[in-house]
Amino acid sequence: MAHLQEILQFRILSIGGTPINVATLIFSTGVAVLAWIFSRLAERTAIRFLEKRDMQDAGSAGATARLIHYVILGVGLSVAVHTLGINLTALFAAGAVFAIGLSFAMQNITQNFVAGLILLTERTIKPGDILEIEGRMVKVTQLGMRATVTRTWDAEDYIIPNSVLVSSTVKNFTLRDRQHRLRCPVGVSYDSDMRRVCAVLEETASAIEWREPDMEPVVLLKEFGSSSVNFEVSVWVKDPFKRAISQSKLNKAVWFGLKEAGITIAYPQLDLHLDHEDVQALRGAAG
Image (cartoon, rainbow, N blue to C red; front, top):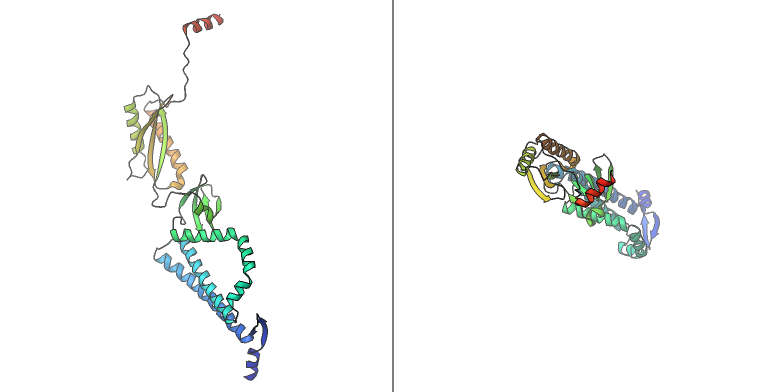
């Protein structure tokens, strides 16, 4: 017993005048290990609780649980270091210069981490949301603490730093709901019967089966153009991520609807008017 006590009291080293023996090292190591185990258990429990309660989606629940893991682990490591008898205040003061240099080196990482916390707290962007960033439509697949993973309609994955999502303007198609309006501009000839044109466009839009039935289509006469009378047909859909396909279907429906009704879809034209003297001169030049 005395031999074991002698081993436990054996002095390994000294840090800042504080002796570190075997017993202290074993105890502090045990505290760190227990903190790691407890943080992992808390992380898994938080994921199951949040997903079961439907409080957050899988990605946001994972990010929240990861944050809990880091907090518990940080507290446990602080206790372990304090158990060794190391003065954390003095240690931080001694490493202040190094910390400042490190903060400059990790400025972007820290900025993205803080932005991740903001996204996690505000929940304005969540996994499954459809976003438009820099003119590109993407779907959020994973919301991390440093970056957000998105996927395009072409099955391309983009890793976007969280600071970009926080500091720039982002269009979120699914923030409140998944309804999205599609617009189809079309111009018809000035010789067309406008009442007939309006009726055909309204019938065509109403007959679209894949549109949102609770939202009525809208037909607007937008403007009197130089070569056509311009209309706009709009319908609502519930999947903005497939906007390209839905837009193509809407364009086809409007095209065939007007063609079957015998209505001319206008195209740019230029009328040239000549004076009588010019016409005679051209005829003379032509022999």
